[in-house]
Image 1: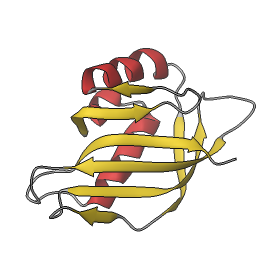
Image 2: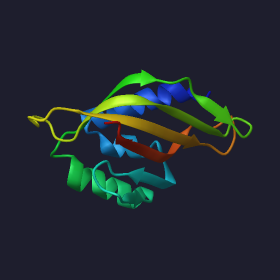
Image 3: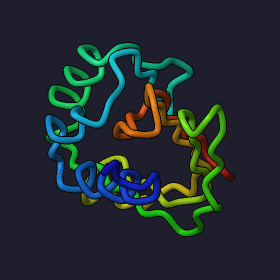
Image 4: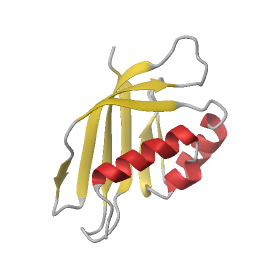
Length: 128
C-alpha cells in the first residue's frame, strides 16, 4: 500500500536533515527540479540533484525545520499532490546567522494511486 503524502514529506525532510541524500533520492522523480534558496537557479534531473546534494551540501549539513505545514492538496485522480508551508532553513550547520525563514512547496507525482509518491519539484524562498 502506498505511503501517505504527509508521510513521504516527513521522511524526505528527515533524510535531508540526516544528510542521507541517496535515500532521499529514492523519493525523487527522474525529472525533479530543485530550487536553490540563495540562487536564482535550480538543479534539474535526478542525477544532477544527487551530485549537487552529495558534493555541495553534504559537508554543510543543512537543516530544514517546518513550522507550519498546510493541509496537502491532491488532484488529477490522486496522481499529483502538493504540500506547502513555512519553515526555518539552516544552510550550514553552525552558521552564526542562524536559520532563514522560508516558504516552501513540495510537489509530488505518481503514475497511479497504487504507486508511491515521488518528489518532482522542491521550491523554497525566503519569507523575509
